[in-house]
Image (cartoon, rainbow, N blue to C red):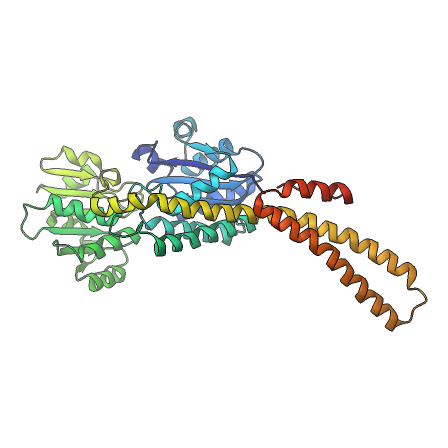
Length: 420
């Protein structure tokens, strides 16, 4: 699967939020899609990544499988006509570009809030799902561990992740701005997943301190409330708390809980308030804005608000790209060595066949002790013969010049042709 890595991608850059939520995949859907790809395509090294900003499928295949994968996504999401979504997908078929794209995504260069570190954990989860069903081969294992190591280098050697430029921090900044004229504003946080927990952590450093947390699993809300000096209430009281809050923030997926215009009207909620929807699919009806004094903000409204931190991060981008380029160069050398290994093994096997034939011919009359000596001597000779071409090929791989040597070796010893 060398030089066959590809990516099918749909992101905030070209798809509006309505489309992104339509193709958004939760954990179960992502695992189902992995199963479908394994069953209906020949793809290997598959990674399914779906966040509020992107849905992507990375895979290794000789063929372009974009149409097949879009159909499988459509089936998983219940679309009848794939044309509804296919126009929003882009397909990166050049191996080197797909590898670089994954680097850029994981390290936050492609994030809506540049340098957002939440994507790293999302990728690690997606990687685990692939590994669990044996859809991650040596190529993907090595690539992702190279990326994770590069991420550590970026953390240690650059200012790219400095400051608090993240979706969760930008949310807190937005709430601070919206509630400037409200004394001790009441904030309700619905959902304590990764984003919700990070928002609450950031409120701990904010002037906004009257925060209430509600979650279906109450003990999680209670633990986070104790950690962030907030208040936890039971899920049964969620609508009562929505009515009392000045700001309602939801990070619960809309297919689990939805704040609709009809339900707001039914609950008799008439006071002015701000709704901030961090969910995917969305969990707050945009039509609520038709009510007097009601405002709805979604993830596309959360702009790069931490301007000072953002400026620092933007300035560090060239350094980050340099580290990525170095990592990709090393990774490409490894992939060439991987392609070279079967040829070397064939070469060694061919020499071993010759060695065994000749030893068998001339040691028939030797006793066991002498045969053992001949075996040891001839094996040492063989290993020394193989060592020089192996070193030369490794050096050639580092220079990106292994193709010619491999072709020569294959021609001389009639080896099967290897892809590099």
